[in-house]
Length: 522
Image (cartoon, rainbow, N blue to C red; front, side, top):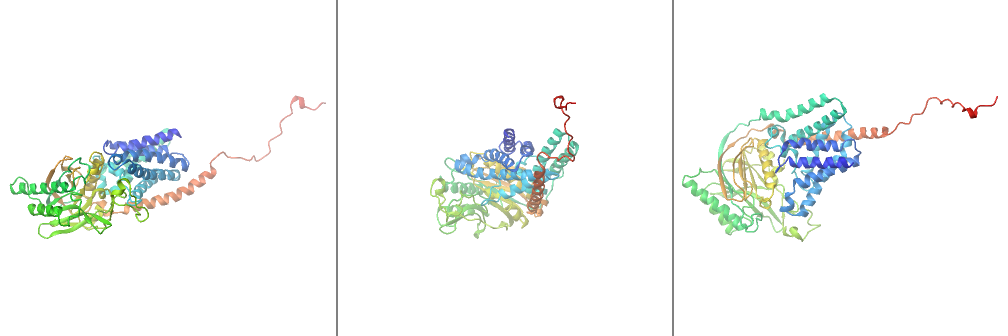
């Protein structure tokens, strides 16, 4: 059992290394294969324990950035909850392994597990989905065909086929069959790199992306929140001067990041006046990222389209506020007044909008910070007609960690999945402009003030992934449930016949011959 636990720990470490910042993506199938090999031929409880060890090693290291940025308590709590899902999957392994072609069913179960933990509890945590490690690999273009969920399934299937091939090599059983299956799965992953899905462009627009920087230590947006707003105002006014002097092309609109205003931008005061000053100078709409009051108990995290003529208009509200970071779940039952939790005096409400924003005649699909990792934010806006994607993010809390690299990798995959150009504005993190094939066209150095002005493509065509929508998740969930029921029946029958057989002899054996001492006297 000790060897199994060590193998699970190695697998979790390999999976972590496939993501940023190490980003050795070819380690991913080996990490997944270790999970399958470590849980092989174990009873339900032991398989669950081995799966839990894998989850602990993987998730505690994958989001280690939370320990330094948010706090050890939040890191321990979140990583523990997420690690449990890998343990729960381990409980299902003995059932699924009883079925023919078990790598297929286990890959479906892995994908379903990722879907569930990405939305529960509360708003879940999508970080660590297998698909998110695929950027800058031959597998990345497959996301335009299969979506994030489908790509995770293919990567999980590749890992489990690798494990099955290893088992076949050890037992000299059907090696050629499983080698062919593994090659077939790899071919399905990399074929889109040879035949990428090209989305036709219907036009272009020019966008200016502003990174204003954060004063002071750089990792606290509230250290001088008015200074943050002032930085973005000054950068936008400077852009207007460059346009007037012919040093920069005139943008069609300007994108500011999340938390470019940390107080309600609609309230009269320095923040409101600064926004009006910037918009008046540049004379095009500015998409402002601001915290908006919603009564005495709630706030909204919004992207607000601020027009130079009509003023504030269309708004996008963040869909997935962070539990215990931006709101307190069940506050009416438990209202903590200690540590960082005491600073959350008002709860952030969730948005529900799936219609794109109207910005300078362009339909823009917006997302705020962690929203980019969720499947229910950008894809619905693309299906509703978004021609261009934007991400407004702060990331100041994570500026000294590798979270910004992980989020940027997810963002690039979203561009490929949707077949859309994507502009990212960060306060001081990773700001950039990304083409529809995931290529970074322009980027700004973290912790600097920068303005990126780029002409970007527009499109209304849909990739296969966008047409599929949530159906892959539904399909894999149904496959998993069916496989678990079938596997449970097979597992129970197998348990009834496990153990040594007790054969009853058909005839009574003959009596032993007497020894010489027992022979009768004649």
